[in-house]
Image: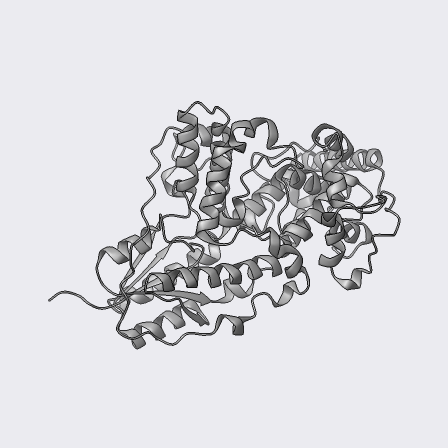
Length: 480
């Protein structure tokens, strides 16, 4: 007898129709497919901006599903309990989902597989969030990679799966289970007035993501090598927002760039290396999950970082009021757009960890609140790289000079003027929008004077180098 029982398609960070292996496999069975999204603890723990962006992405994807004769079922609670309820309600005999790789997701998914298979319910996980599964890339001795360049060399010649087509239709069940109303979840509640400011900068959904990729490959990718470090130039893809929620797959990005490279666009390879940097972050998180919560290099555990986010200097950093133009412009860009240019992220992170000698987790946690393109692996990897405590990290003695970086990458001050209103007779709307986005409790005024530096750059650098030297001496002494 043919099997007509439904398949539960458990969605997470894979809000797309094309190149969706789990969806493709479910539709290929011909059985009814019930797309489900669960607001579990992992969702509730998201920061304000990524949770708000998730809600918008879910709303958009639900509309796409309706266009294919399907629907998105929303439920809240522990994933295992919710899926058990849906199996009982619908008679589903299979659950399909796309893999995630953080420790919380792995533990949750493993528990679901054990429970489902114990009941005779098929439980299958699929790839799609990464091009290279972390357990498939190993050194000659069988271990994980700890440095990016050898990792890149190991994967650069590998075949990357061709993107799968979107289904023409999604088989629907005869009756749909009940669903929560998305509005009742209030995923955007913590964004408050900042949502209205950030909203115009979003590119929501799969179609917008694919259009963004096409625009990039047709234009900026040709000068990616030259422009990707210039924060005032439209030189990057902007796809981190969409990759974070799986509105586009890395496979789609890779093959678009590969096509450009084969047409003679040499800088396309640099973009492909950036895609592999994302893979490297996931490789590290999977093999050494301490990357998310601890110093990857244990010798940094004794370093005397400030861990108090309420100190005046850290508060000035959070507010984009350090008196250092490049740092403040970057923070304000984040509050207005929900994203921050990658070069600026390095400067901002280095300044917090080195000039202010504050723990990288303060920055990691703050970015997790503020970035619409928040990604657990990339955020942790980036912060530990800047701090010096991570794999393949910036060496302890490399302390970015924000003013020197400004002069090199923003010599005409376009980026500075775009985001800092104080001191401009007629500041642009982008700079003024910052004052509309941030909490009223900060009591900031565009007419106020721009602040003096909270720490002189030369003083901060000297202090950092002295602290690193003392810490290294103490570590060597302890070994002795």
